[in-house]
Length: 214
Image 1 (cartoon, rainbow, N blue to C red):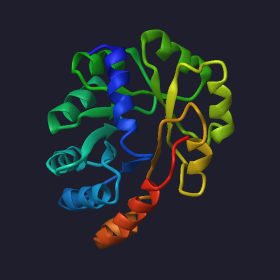
Image 2: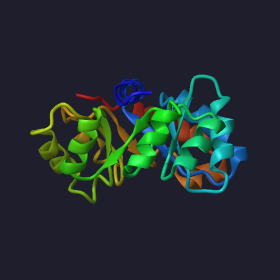
Image 3: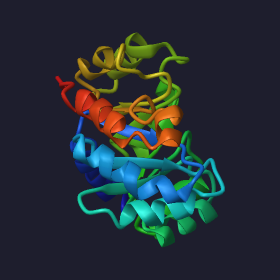
Image 4: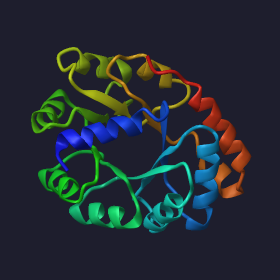
């Protein structure tokens, strides 16, 4: 997979809904119900972060739920890429980038949403062919004003800002011309997941799905 093909695939994922849920799931037995609630609420693109021992099993469970597009977040190594692809992930997300990680995603045909924090990193990825990137950690790096400033001299790149994004500030990002969608964890809070409150999560997803991208 070329970087251009990866960016085209990432664009399609980002355009499915204004918010991509960023999920940290400890118990794979809750995965299918969680996925169904988010999809029913209008958020079909699901990023399962590789931050728990259950993450790969969670991807497997969610990948079996109709209507969802499941990706793996927190990709750090080539092995992460291989494991995520084998578990059923159809896209990947990384907090930053290395050449080995990019090579692995391209070799394994896993579309990557690569993370950047600076204009230099955005330029490096653009030079390689990646025109869709993740701005992370968004709020810690200056929030929407910083992303707008990066976009001015690099209009070729579109972003999915993640990290500190919430319902309160999501519109600040979605109103920018260089933002395709945002990533956020607020649509699946741990207390609701632990309680099995799928109706509550569906309601949060439905609220997020009503946000508009400029």
